[in-house]
Image (cartoon, rainbow, N blue to C red; front, side, top):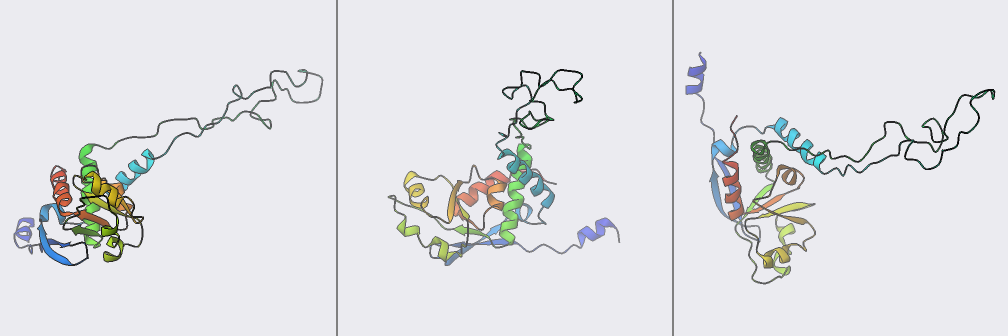
Amino acid sequence: MTARATTEHAEPQPPVRVKVFNLQGSEVEQLTLDQALWGGPVNLRLLVQAVAMYRTNRRAGTASTKTRGQVSGGGKKPWKQKHTGRARAGSTRSPLWRHGGVTFGPHPRDMSYRLPQAIRRRALQESLKGKLRDEKLVVVDALKAEAPKTKPFAGLAKAFGVARRSVIVLDEPAAPLVKSLRNLAAFELRSAANLNAFDVLNAHKLLVTKDAFTRLEQRLNHAPAD
């Protein structure tokens, strides 16, 4: 059988769906997602590259040591050059001596680098796809607050089974909503415009509002195809 015939008789892939919940954890509807965007296997190699970049960019790069020229003291020659029976020595701050300088030690430097924007978007897509398949991506109908009050959202962790650090993704967070959610110990806040693959992979669960999910799909539509 030729490759063309195999393609023609390939079984259609089932549609990808995601459930939408209210604040109490009850399902209110289902969304049918784009198969081209959310289907197919997760590209783990791409995720490894993205995580390596984000972790490297978090390094401070402040480790520092002193060379023999930067260590104080050592100006006087310890003993005369010859006729002592000892090895020649010009300074007590030589790297061979205790309290001396360090040879080839670390110095402050910037280790950060950036992958191309298209690759970072694709990594975000693959990370979200993995969370969706593991049922760790939860779409919430809406999160709204007229005044800064944490009490209406205190049951989010219990309603969605959040056991450790998770992320709430908002579309355009208003000040009252941000003040209401930022006191929840189990959650960190992110916007759909700034979410990255490291945030997704480092979270136990991802709570995304319906509007934020639409914004994420708009971002992902610019990711390159294989």
